[in-house]
Length: 148
Image 1 (cartoon, rainbow, N blue to C red):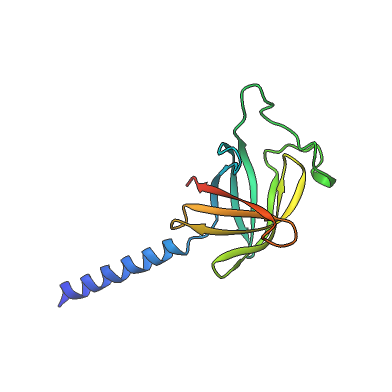
Image 2: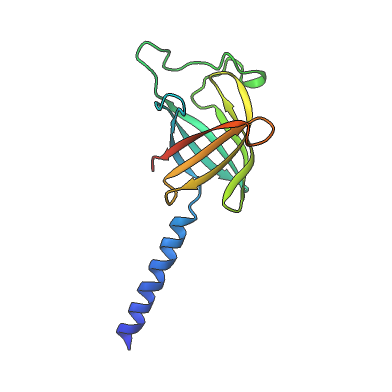
């Protein structure tokens, strides 16, 4: 009797843990991959505060001959000429079913801000990040890889 109860508890806890992995959150550190070149660009930490997800650049992967700590010279407003490392580039995302939407993403390379939505894949190991103008059909998607 006790063995059956323990077995039932073990099986139910395994089911709970596998379900939790399938509905993973984007919170964590992500390695960004350029969708055009396939090269690693940065590490972005996504956090959640009051149901809103935000992403901050923690590290850049730059060529040795490039500025290792560049400023966002193409940005406007309060981010103009501020260091890219430490900059919040992803704001306003909210969980909406299987996706996270309603946010914006800044591309420090051109200083432009785009509407953004994201969704997880591969049990939370990959994050699709779609930046777009107007409607989602007019945009680009990068796949970020979870670091932790």
